[in-house]
Image 1 (cartoon, one colour):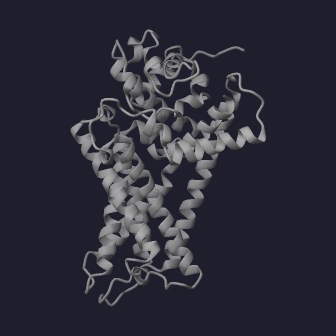
Image 2 (cartoon, one colour):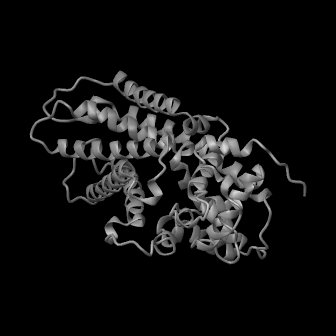
Image 3 (cartoon, one colour):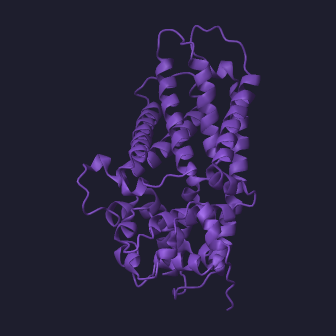
Length: 379
């Protein structure tokens, strides 16, 4: 099979934050040290080689691109300081942009000015729309869904989910198309049992439980307690966001079932409120630690931060903190003056986060499980 060589591939990857990997001479130390490179696989060395040789299609069709958890052991061990870990992160940003037909992911990843202006404008437009349909309130208590009708927020949420879902589906189909077109790795014929096993390991074991991140990618020199180790911080951030999403959906379900009036507070011991509170605390804790470590550059995995990293973490943190403050405001004896403006910010940021899932750093929640499934299925 003929392979097209593209000399522009490496310069393009540099625009996405790839460090100078021209120093890499394919020695294989990164593969030898990587805890995820097993059964003779040449990951992550193969990815660097694809970039050096301009093999664009092979790079984009490799599901191994999404195996990396960014532990940076390869970078620490690289004898030429080629920094393969940063290259892998840049290659994933490049892949996300390549799967996206709107080119929005490309501009968000390569232009700091565009990313700042676009995200700010998106949040502002969402907040402005809600304010345009707001209604007067008496001000004695916080009644968010009297201030902005619940139908308006629900319809906006449905529109955001529809746009995000369509973009995510297009990206996933493009990724699957490229992976299926890529070279096979000698996998046995897939069976129902093998397919189910691959799906379970990709979705439950690796993506949700993060077993390999916690065990295989553990730093042998790590002296921090478990609650400040990299795997737990990532775990808390991920499950904090998923928990808040689940609590929101459950709360909406209770309203649809007529078990709860729209927008009314419930006692703190209610299961939905407990879930939301714990998830919010986990999200704020995880994002705060990640932001502080990136500011201090105290982790080897946080030495190189991009606009995508900061945008994603900042929006997560703002959504978590404003949500917690609003929850406290509901239980105050009188309505605080900042309640409704903060409500607009909170909902707008949360909606923008969901809308940007297929276009930024959060896209790995879509692509990683599918890639891990393909790797497991192919053997």
